[in-house]
Image 1 (tube, helix red, strand yellow):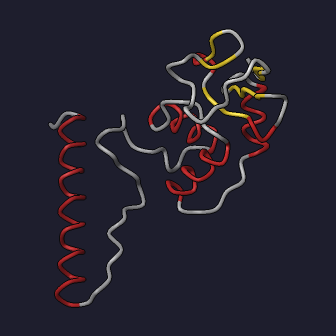
Image 2: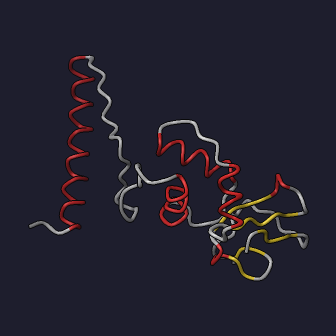
Image 3: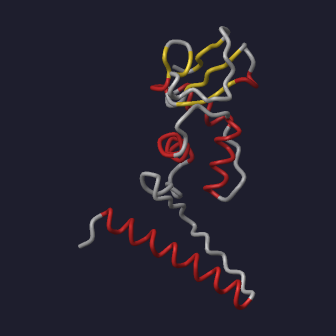
Length: 148
């Protein structure tokens, strides 16, 4: 019986082959075939996006596997839409996740537009730890951690 790693490797190889076949079909026969699987797989990511999981689980998966630094809510939405293949609104959901201490938000200069999201363990004092702080986040003394 194959191990989990063997199966993941074989699946990755098959997806590469399917993409090559799609390219040949398009180049040789003008046939456009959607080679994008309905499950997202990336060898640099630990596991497969939980397509059938709830949105909370999917958002947490993104913070565990895709985001390595704090991000704006817009980036979370864009990445989630990319993986799910549909438009989605998550404003209220992430606020609830913040209340449940699954995510935190750091608001800079008391402005909602200057807020970045991340995991609670990324917080150091009243800001994200340097390792997890987005390069785009402002350097200011006025900041507030919401949800830790």
